Length: 146
Image 1 (tube, one colour):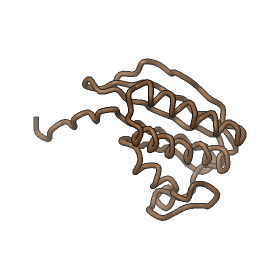
Image 2 (cartoon, helix red, strand yellow):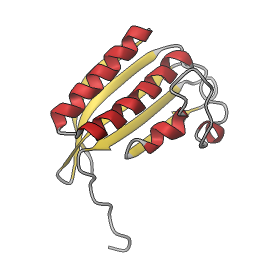
Image 3 (cartoon, helix red, strand yellow):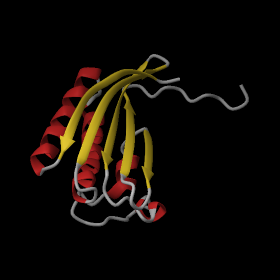
Image 4 (cartoon, helix red, strand yellow):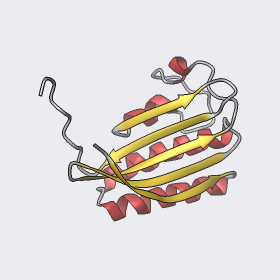
């Protein structure tokens, strides 16, 4: 079971300068929670790609950051939301190597590989929300049949 400590920050994503603030906030929040430099970099890279997608493809939106804990592990959950056109072909957008261009070139699948938990809700005409979570120490997975 995950518990959340409430939304720590909600940052607008409306311009390239906002992308800088998102990266800075994510790095500082991850450092405060005890993430190592490599894991900070992975999370910031994923956040940068997702924030750029929110701006470029979603027409702008927001990022909400939240401190979460599960089974003694601390984590950071980020939610990127927009009210843009949505993603017509989610399976294609999540496939390895797919990119629409203009970002870091890693696409949603690359961002997904950099984090522990990845969820996406999108449909044509109804915007997109991507939620990612990284853990300082990965919580153990429940065992099958227990």
